[in-house]
Length: 335
Image (cartoon, rainbow, N blue to C red; front, side):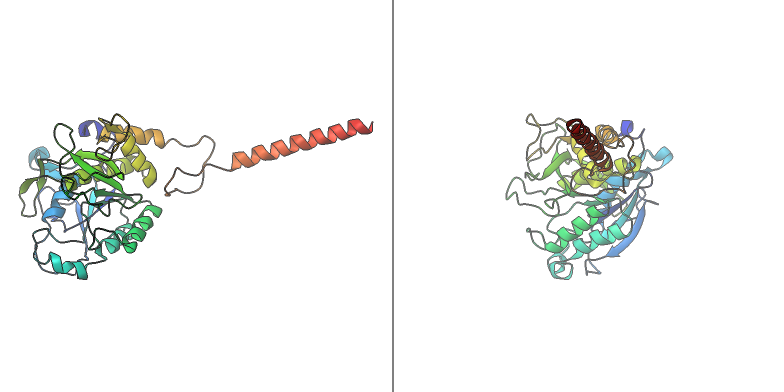
């Protein structure tokens, strides 16, 4: 992902990334000082806690440990802060089935909490947050609320690409950056879901991450890929703090390597995410309009609206010119 080169621009300073997951262990050596603990919205006070969320947080903002921080995991945006919001339980937790009822709107509430507490990026390495694989109105409204308030949302595409290949939410909601997984050879992992809403792919096999027990684990999944892309979004927001979610997504999609021959495919998206190329694309997208300060930041689903001032001025000049021509013509006829 060419992170050493990308870090010349910044390492995520000043950016808050909300990790909506199973909780984050802020005492892990690689995450000390990086984690702000948010609420537990699952309705399940007991049970397994924080393994998956800690792993994702380490890929986003891990700081490493030891002499010159050469031990452990360094995340994509190691200077960013993490806001941990528990919205789901671990896959192996026996309470998970019952959590469907108690935490039905946990993801929607978590998104809104993240936005209201200043999150610049929201990372969601999960699926079926509403308790179903069809999404929900409350989640989609929360997603649009986040985008309208300038937050960038990233989600994993899902891990059943080799079987049912279900449409996965929150990845499938409009405006969310959906991320699939590739292996070391840049080939799409068999488990990675394939859909036409996929944005990009990122490394997702044999990924080393922090574990909740102050140790480490190696795993596969689109979860890790999404966390890394959330880290890239944090790098972009650090360098371009006022950039809209739409343009951040465009920068990530345009700044890819190994692009498909046709430019896009449901399995590969726009290509393999690359931090350095994404930052370069962001710099091109962040160029101001000459002579136009413009209104406040625009967070909609399209490019920022252009200024109407020059257009109105041009029309007024045209009207004046036409009026003068009409008057001159009439005077000529009268004479």
